[in-house]
Length: 313
Image (cartoon, rainbow, N blue to C red):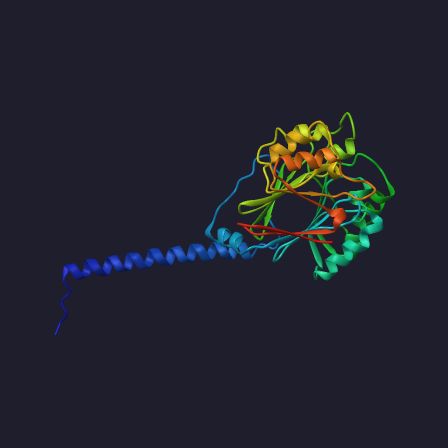
């Protein structure tokens, strides 16, 4: 006996088929997006002044699952920061040459074999001194630097190590953004090739690292002229501020701290080269809790919705 199908049943079947097809297409598109992310070995970097941000469901999930650990190494009045997430390692500045063994030892203790990005904010010895040790002991992906405004033995050792590794530095001249593990890294370069005073310090790269609602701004050794540029730069508000120039005061310090408006501050200072009391007073008046690396390594644990800070004294 032939089976007769009513027009109503045909309509229902057609609707179900359309719904199934749309669902399958959606799943295929999501899988394509995920596959394209998994096929990317290196984070995508842009060096344009305008930054395009693409939001996807997978990226949102990645941000929610990400934990970023930032370690501020005690090493005198010198900068050395290690940023580690699930699949990525960034080193911002490398401290003094005589303290480089501690930085290398710390990376080894964390099981690091590759530094994905090495960022040298500027070429004073207390920022570039350990760079050759990083290059000689670890695989390094990309090296970002500011322009060279001086010469020194530390810089020569760094350049020789760079050549021995077959690497070339990338001098950042425009705002540059890259992302990894759902974390955004934006590098702000100096806007002048020379400054009236302290060209080396004022040529500092400034880096903002953002994860969800939280962020940290690394301000290098920026002094008055560089801070004047930064006060005209949008988007620098941050949860944590690495206070510029080891907590030394200048006429733009108060305006800059208010502009960034951090909840926490890190100052890389030493007993022999202490931070200025005026800077501590400004931070306190702003309601900012301050940590000094001269008191021990500072560890920041950052997620999309929270920050925890501890200090090993």
